[in-house]
Length: 157
Length: 157
DNA sequence: TTTTTATTGTTCCATTTGGAACAATGTGCG
DNA sequence: CGCACATTGTTCCAAATGGAACAATAAAAA
Image (cartoon, rainbow over all chains, first blue to last red; front, side, top):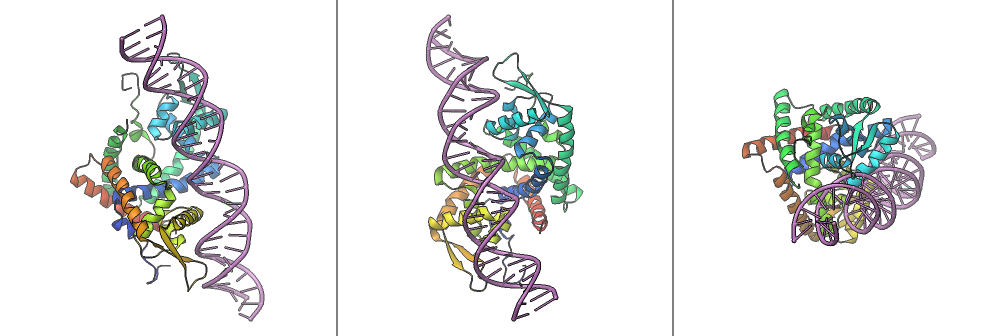
């Protein structure tokens, strides 16, 4: 596979016209796809469902629209996830008394337990993929990612 | 929207159990989705198609399997992309004389022109999303991303 | 050699996906 | 007030997606 005739498949990391975008996307795929496949196999959840769970684990109450904004996903996929997770007892929904359009979503204790299990899959895979960075590099990367992500969140308001 | 009653939607960047994975995925989405939507609208290409184009722009000749490995995408999506891009004249295919199973793919000049246009969309969006990093930070991020990506590429061999 | 195992590319099929249109509700402006 | 416009959540539908099985070829084992 890695003989002299085979091109170095990773040279593209350097030659691509958009190196940061390429590497970020590559890392995202490397982390999320395997974890996602395991989560689907072990819990039967699709991506929008555990994203919904993750959002609700970190806020007391959210609307579906807010979840869509936080996760940068289309509203209809969140809507579907809400229905399935409601049916499975992982969250509660109550109409907002102040605004008849929106509903207030909260995670249940069953949902929180499920999220705790699932987040282990993602943490483990994250640590595997970033495993060759030393502590300083890891800290530095984390900070730079946060700065960029906060800026990205302000775009496309 | 950002009044006192509204929770800070971005606190999750700090509280999530897998902060690097979350931020990387968030940035990947922030870069790729808008660019992807524009590329689809302006050129009618789906993601696997411009990924194929990008790979073939950076290697003289590749097999479909190699494209799948480089891009971490399932083989059947690459196979479909090859057929569409062949029909549109963006690449050439020739059977490998040494191995009857595989075919040697090359980009055509039309394909290269198309890739040049498309990569502008991704570069521009990349620079927008990373726009608040100064030169040192940007350089540092780029290096850390490369180190991690090279390591990720060696996983799941 | 023959037989088994692995690899490549493809097709099939069920599921996921997201854009667009929609009804219901709320907001702003005359 | 009345009327245009915006927002939320949902449904519809066409398209994309990816796992699994497949035929053809190659490599390895017996």
